[in-house]
Every structure is written in C-alpha cells, then in structure tokens.
Image 1: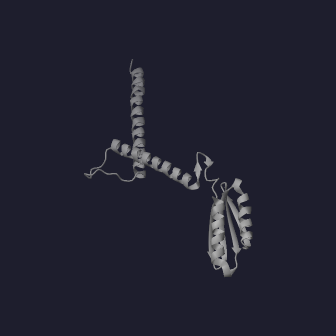
Image 2 (image 1 turned 90 degrees about the horizontal axis):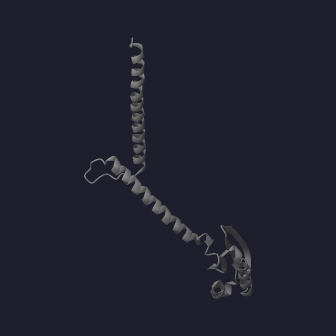
Image 3 (image 1 turned 180 degrees about the vertical axis):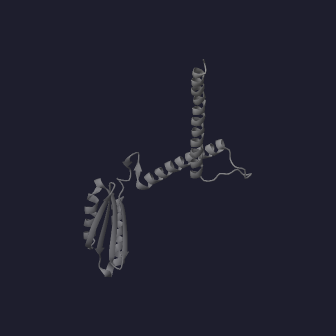
Length: 177
C-alpha cells in the first residue's frame, strides 16, 4: 500500500543531493580552470625549496603581480605625460618655445616647437632670418596634440657662414627666452 508513494519522494529526495553534488563539482572544476588560467598568465614565482605553491599562495602571488603591474602602468603614464609636457590635463609646455639651429656649409635648418597660441613666434623667426640676410628656401609645419613643429630651411652667404650662423643662433635663442 505504501509501495507507490514512498518510492516517489525517495527518488526526488535522492535527486536533490545528487544535483547539488554535480553543481558543486562543476563549480570546483570551473574554479580550478580559472586558477589554472590565472596561474598561466602570471610569471612563475615558485618557492625556493622547489615545492609547488599552494592555491592561496598562487592567488596571493597573482594579486601582488597585478598590483605591481598597476603601479608600473601608473608610473609609465606619469612619465609619458611628463615627456609630452602634460600636467593635470593642461599643456604646461605650451608656453615654452624651443628653437634649434643647425648649420652645414651655409645651409641653416631651424626647428621651432611652440604651442598653438604662440604662432607669432614663427613670424618673428622669419623676420630675424631676413634681418640677418638669410634666404628662406622652405618652411613647413605640423601640429601634434596642440604642439606645432616648424622646420625652416634657409641659405646664408658662404663667406660669412660660421659667423652669421652663430649670430642667427644666438638671436633666435635670446628670442626664445
């Protein structure tokens, strides 16, 4: 008389623990795979005795490695911003004018680096070159992230090339200050 009813609860009650066991087994396998993947991404940090590291030690090692990478990224971003001249989102180097003069056998190459708001400097450099009797052959520029790079090619007389080049360089550098 109770042969039909007791078997039904028994089978359903036996399926619940089995289902939980399978779910737990799958969860453990998934965690094992995650830990294995994490461990494969981190450089080996084996213990000094040569024994394999425990799982908590591996996770701690991975956490420390990630923190170190984050610090390195932060330092590199600061260095990049310093090299670019960016400080707190504003271009701190935009007010600076950089002038470099190279002379070779009467040919001058003037490299001028300014911010966008200092375009008048280009005109002044051209004016100084003309005052020093240098013939401007070519002038070009490019703009990169708010910084303007000018290149000016000029020719000076060969008889006074050394003296004229030094005088032009001195005047341009004084102007840049």
